[in-house]
Length: 346
Figure 1 (cartoon, one colour):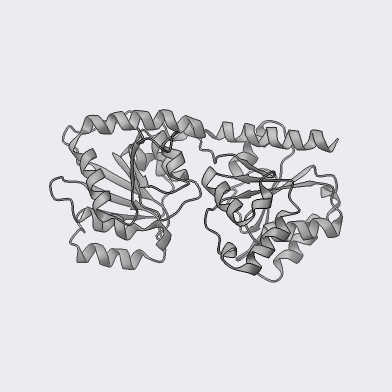
Figure 2: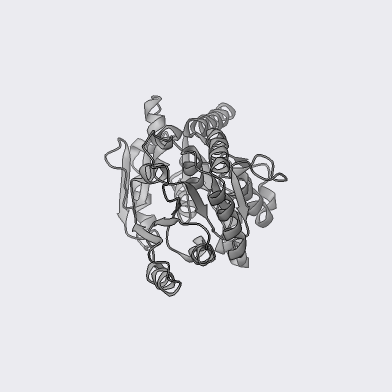
């Protein structure tokens, strides 16, 4: 969101970014934070109401909302204040706990009724939402998340001829990311030397470190913690691995592809469409694996270890593929959507 806000400002658009939680905008102009520790705090909607009730927001053209419960707060507050702005929201996930319960689906049906357009960050997200709310077919538009491709382009660095291959994973250490399958798969690779770097932090870190110890992989697996230097880590790596059970959109995968890394990722919607244009074909950017199969992960990694030329070829294909998800394209599609709404408004 902040990247799109920054691009909007650079284009002379009067854009403002508001966060219910503490913001990490880092001094970006026109950013506002309500400074809550949790969006579900009882006073959060009331503080948001006070913020939007200020006279300076009376003539807003569009309010673009991300994530629940802001998706619920904003329509109610907008109606009470009689704001004239059109509402747009972005759906980020293929998995939503509200869709599993009848009253959750009723809440979604109520809140989505207020939005002129609903942006899905992938086809998988769009399909998942339509399964729950089929009446939204005319409102949904797919706009992929974007990455600043230039930031992740590979840099020329000196690599020893006999460099040990490095596998990199980036993401929170939580259940849905399924690091356990990745680690167990590595314990089945005996014929090649390698290192596995995990950049991220989370509640499962003690459990995963214990597993690494039990499998005698401590000399191969490195827990790097939360890192801000992801482009540099990608530049030092040879293969990117993501074994998630589900992803709305594989942003970290796009970053790896932009860095010319072959990718080994779960065969799930949200990742499948990132690595391959045609879902029926084997991707040329890496391998799709069954996230529940340690053997599948191990076999694909072994293929890349055994064939440096294949790694390079898939890496080149991955970089070309990543251009589809450049942040400028994402921004342009958002701007076109906003303009079409405002033209109809007039």
